[in-house]
Image (cartoon, rainbow, N blue to C red):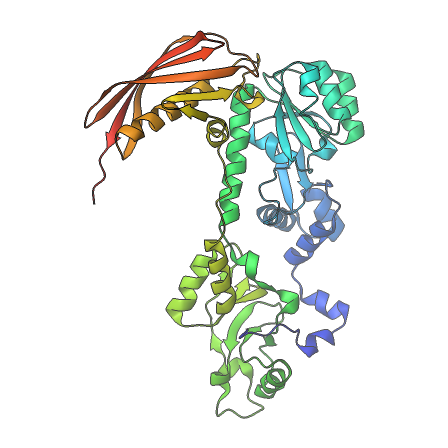
Amino acid sequence: MICCFLLIGRVKSRTIEEVTSLVTKHELILEHIKQLEIGHKISVRQIAKALQVSEGTAYRAIKDAENQGYVSTIERVGTIRIEKKHKGNIEKLTYAEVVKIVDGQVLGGRTGLHKTLNRFVIGAMKLEAMKRYIEAGSLLIVGNRDQAHAYALKSDAAVLITGDFEAKEEAKELANSVDLPIISTAYDTFTVAAMINRAIYDRLIQKEIIHVSDILIPFNQTSYMYTSAKVSDWQTMNKETGHSRYPVVDEHYRVQGIVTAKDIVRYENQTAIERVMTKAPITVTETATVATAAHRMIWEGIECLPVINEASQLIGIITRQDVLKAMQMAQRQPQAGETIDDIITDQLIEMGKDRFQFTVSPQMTNHLGALSYGIITTILTTVTERVLSKQKKGDLVIENMSLYFLKPVQLENVIDISPKILEVTRRYGKVDIELYHEEQVAGKAFLIAQFIDRYH
């Protein structure tokens, strides 16, 4: 490492009162919020009164805490302290985030909104069959089914009621007692599942993007110097740490410069660091991507970047070596994100030449327990793309689809798909598809796809 990671001795020698006096009110509020219990409700007036600051200062700090992922504001609920998302759990949504995604209303169990869900279950089946899927930490997506609501809560699972239905008072009281929310939304089951899956998929994409916050050396492990320090202080630190580059901060820890071995050459020991340092150095925020930081470091030919917050205060450093390691690791990571289309089409089995089969799973059904129109559209599109790609290589898009016959297809039914290519030209492909259940026709469709030429 080119930068060093030990606190300068003079900071250690300060009293707690002296260090605290240097921290801004904004930072004090942030630290106060971080110390609050997960699930604690926060208000501007409460923070202002507790820390004796203005409501404007409290409001700005709470918004900053929300941007950093320490709190979440929910309509009709308020602002609550949540667990900060890290790379390991970024794809896990909190129930509070689910409320936002589905534009929901919390009917009970508000104190459990900060908790994360491990999976969601679509309750489009009989209760006995549903019990196999419900487990602790899951979210049951279901309609107006009181027994299912109660069973889920007793199994330590939250409940999301679709169709804008209400819950019984007994269920609300149970939700309050087990600290798990009951949420109501006006959307239907399939739409809700698609929305949640999209949110998880977006998180997984974000998970693959490495940010400065993932690799920075934190403030309490970073060596730095004050503007009031002397060249002799640099020499002392250099002997203790073996490093030669240090951020230079003022009494409020705002970055003022950076000093290196090259800067102090030919200067006497009593020369002020502020005089020899490189002023207004290039810095980076923790929300910046590693790719952005790498570009700056390579373009400017620098080895170490101070990482700052919105108040320009030092919160850590990154080095070129850290950046290179992170980028090499990112290239070896598999893509983990899946859309709901991916989940559905993965269940589509190719049985032979132009024959496919799938079993209707809970994720494929609507609120009545029948195969969803949106799901059958996805399956027909996938089948068409697969059979036409064998006839002609290249990209294609579905231009027109006519689903002119479809019987109700129930949960756990096995469906056979028989596509027939009617015509393939240079620009178009036409496919007729029939669906069978127990050798009876369950659906018919006609699709036209347009081929897209690839220009080199």
